[in-house]
Structure formats: structure tokens, C-alpha cells
Length: 230
Image 1 (cartoon, rainbow, N blue to C red):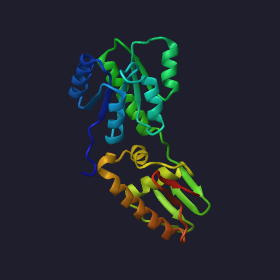
Image 2: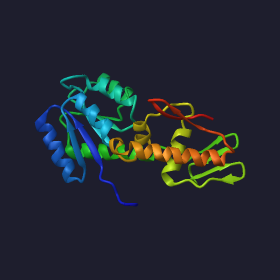
Image 3: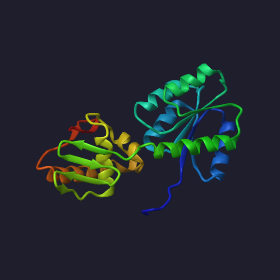
Image 4: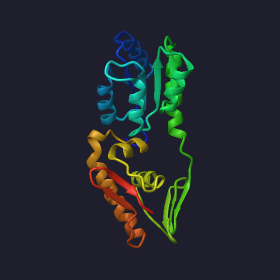
């Protein structure tokens, strides 16, 4: 329902079953929906399929290094990543943050501290995009006032249509997959909503073309996704 507060979803990636049980118990009691993965392969599958708010990632995994997994995730997702590690040395912390991690927590740790760090990273991710006015000759996208105009004409776009267009327009020329678009604008899990995204993009593109005197700003890249082309 519109306006309903969504439960926060986190993924715990660690093969220490007892530790993950403790983390799951704490975060569940704090109101989170917790998913768990003991390997990097399982983690990747869940991240591609489920809409997540944060990933808590161990450095040592049975099938791959957590640092490598972080770098792989960052190629497709902006989801906050909090490292868990028994390595307290500065070089490990710096490496984790350099590869795209948002925070680094050393074992042993306080569950309450981990929860506060996770909440802080989720809140920071949600508030990091400032309002901007994007201009492409006569086309103007005002993300603060949520207005799309072409010359003296203003378009009538649904909320989700505006969000998709604004997201793409902030990265001109870059191709985004369906998963990246959903992750970027915090929408439904990709597994259930690919057709809905395609329909929304088609509607948005039609309205944009009509508003802009036949100009087509949205390109479809076969088997890859969509891009905004000024």
C-alpha cells in the first residue's frame, strides 16, 4: 500500500553458523527481515533476486574472498556493504573500504553496534542523492520539484516513471540493467517485476517522446538494459 513503511531486509554472508544465528536473532528482534548465505555463490544469487537494504559480509568465505565478492557486487549494485572480519589491521580495513565497502567491523563485536552501523549505512544510502536540475538543451528534469519540461511544456509522468527517467538521466550514456535500475530507485525485487519495469519504461518513453517533439532520449540496449542518450 502507498505510504506503508517497508521492512528492512539484510543479508548476512558468513559460514560461521553459530555467529549468524546470533546476528539473525538480534536483527529479527530489532524488526529486520534477515536472509543468510554461507558462500559467495549463494550470496550473489540472493542479491540478484531479492531487494536488499544492506549486506553484512565476512572476509573469509569457503568459495571466495569477501573482498573479491565486494568488488563483484559493486559492478552491479549500490547496496550498502558492511564487512565483518577478524582481521583488524589497517591494510585490511583500507582494502575493504577501497573496494566499495561502506563500513568495516572487527570481530568480536557488539550486536548493538553492528545494528547501529547497519542502520546508519542504510540511512546514508537513502539520503545521499541531493536534488538537482538536469538540463539537456530544451529538456529539463528538476529532481527537487519533480518536474519534467521541454521548452514551455510540462509533462505528466507517474511517480515511478519520473524516478526511472531521473535515475537514467543522472548517468547519460551509461547502460543500466533491469536489476541496477531497481536497485538504484529502491523498487520491487527483480524476479517479480521485470515485466512491470518494461511496461513503465515504455509508458515513460512514449510520454517523453510526445513532450519532446518526437525526440527519443531512451535507448534500449539488447540483452543489457536501458540508457539515457542526450
